Amino acid sequence: MSDSEWTKILEWPGYRVYRSEINEAKRTLRLWVRRKRGNRVLVCSGCGRRVYKIVETYEREVRDLPWSEYRATVVVELYRVRCPDCGPKTEKVAPLPSKAPFSKRFEEAVGQACENAAVRRVAKQFKLAESTVRAIDVRYLQRWAAARRKPALRQMGVDEIYLGKKQKFLTVVSNLQTGEPLWFGRERKQETLDEFFQKQLSAFQRGGIQAACVDMHEPYRLSLERWVPQCRLVYDKFHVMQHANEAVSEVRRAEFFRKGGAARELIKGKHWLLLTRWVHLNTNKKRQLNALFALNRRVMKAYLLKESLDRLWSYTYERAMLRYLQSWIDQLRWQRLKPMEKLARMLLNHLDGLLNYCRIKVPLGVVEAVNGNIKALLRRGRGYRDLNYLLLKAQRLAATKTEFVAFQKAA
Ligand SMILES: [Zn+2]
Image (cartoon, rainbow, N blue to C red; front, side, top):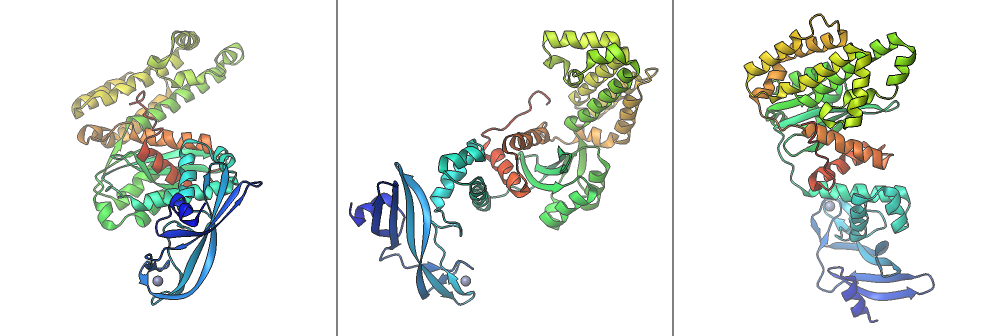
């Protein structure tokens, strides 16, 4: 094949092939390219301005997309330029977006493959090290993130994700209107969220935040009050029901620990039944749960209270919501369910944020869906030690909605 035919097949805009080499035994193809005659605009890689002075030429080798069974390498002739602002620099070339030995379209192919498959599989497919695939994917996602417009933050979600014994908690800030995570912070302290407000947003941006869906977790509230005093806190169903589930678990533990022996055996491994909503249980599971209730009425009462608390968010009028909450709390009387009483006190202490649900319309279930997506990524990927990578990945997932987990059930 002639050089001009190779040039046509390679399709690198502005570049032409001037030498080629095929190794049939090794199944490799090498192409040497340089600028076409008309392509003379040089750009400084430091500042992006146009430069005219060439210092020297040099070669760089990058891996490009494979051609059939052949692994392709492109050797590019490049210029070192002298920039009036930056001094001696390399020129900026579109098909070579990074210092890594890969062409842009090769990196894009790897990045796209990573959207649907685990890093390990992509590494196998492209015969690359896993760490290399991860690095390529990060760059692919960074380029995507840099090129898109970021919508304003009006309603935010703050949530925590438990990563495990070692890494503990991750604070997740999300945009409720776009359903995408915006920022990750280590731990779940007031300082954690402070850092987001301080470093990620300008005073103007902070002023634009109208509402925040948060857990009734004191440190977050303190941070929000300090940085976005105008923002209204909304305690959404997802977070409150988490506390309700915890209360039910506590009742179960107290009750069955006291019982000991056979009863304890019977409920072993069934505690998740208590955390599942009745409507989501099949007949068999319902029977199991009823058997459990037959053993202990307090656990049953706690479960029913949790189930009925859910209705609180079916009200759109403050007073109706308040009335329902009052009747719910009334049912606790004489029950001696300490964890439920504790929950009731917590609800009363955060009453305003509960009623805000009626005053401000925030999309339901978004915090939960964001949370679910991140957990799905963590389960699949492992080794997201690089939080920035995890964040980019989750943002991309939300934007493309390829695997967007909508938690219809809980909403
Ligand atoms: Zn420059």
